[in-house]
Amino acid sequence: MAAIPASLRRLVIQRADNRCEYCKISQIGQVATFHIDHIIPVVASGETTAKNLALACVSCSLRKGARQTLEDSETGKIVFILIRANRRGKNTSLGMARKWLG
Image 1: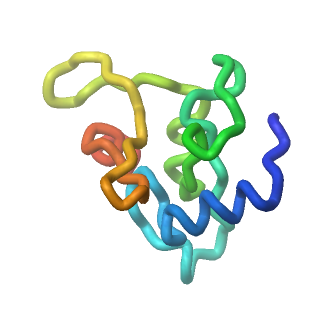
Image 2 (image 1 turned 60 degrees about the horizontal axis):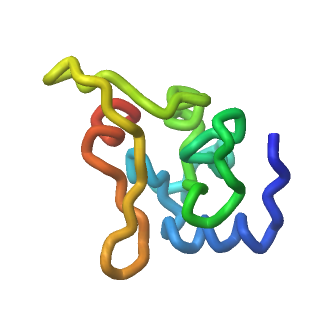
């Protein structure tokens, strides 16, 4: 696992507003600490950069694992799991990832 500097962890947590970037559940009040997830996994040459990291609740992090794709339950098509930045610079999950992970 790639070491994530404390300053980068803080940036990801702040950007996510303390919420899972996949399902949007708040970290506040949760027993388990949320994970810093590589959107493109390290094993697939994903970098440890702010734009490739997402705050993930334990449930979403474990469901996603090292996956980069998932099957859309409505269409049966394989789609990429991504996080996209909105105009304010905060990350918002693609609906597909929220549906599957959340």
